[in-house]
Amino acid sequence: MIWLSNSTIARLRDQLRATGQRPSVALGEAPLSPEAAELASAKAEYGCISEAMYLMMSADGKISREEREVLKGALKNLSGDSIRSVYIEAMLDDAAKAVAEQGRDARLQDVLGTLHEDKARAEVAFVLAAAIAFADNAIADEENETLNMFAEGLGIDEGRANELLDTVEADLAERPD
Image (cartoon, rainbow, N blue to C red; front, side):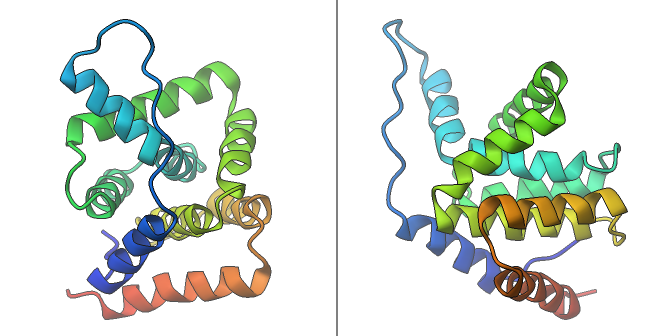
């Protein structure tokens, strides 16, 4: 399984926090249970990043246990361990359903469009997508192509993308055995 250093996760978490709080979530008129409200809040904060990671996980047509573990660990660490596993699973299920209903390309364009507006979130999503790509120790051609589409669609120039990828690779070199 891929390992991201505590300093990298802290930097990503701080990068998200520096952008400020996400807009309020409009929950509609019907009263929601506390769990439903918590899930809506988690989706508003991490849904797009989660979907970006899902799109990377599914790029090669197979989702490995290691990729799922990286996604879950990343979201737990980014949230300061405040997001429950059941909500992460719900976001993964939502992403899979959206891809099945709308198609992978449509979902990719929607996610890229949403993240493109927030440079900090875009870079966090890119780094975590790269971590997913490296999770099973082999980057498939489809994953490499998806990373390139992420960089382009998120407005991350080649130099910056290489810097971000170098960070992930440096973490891999430092991971404990």
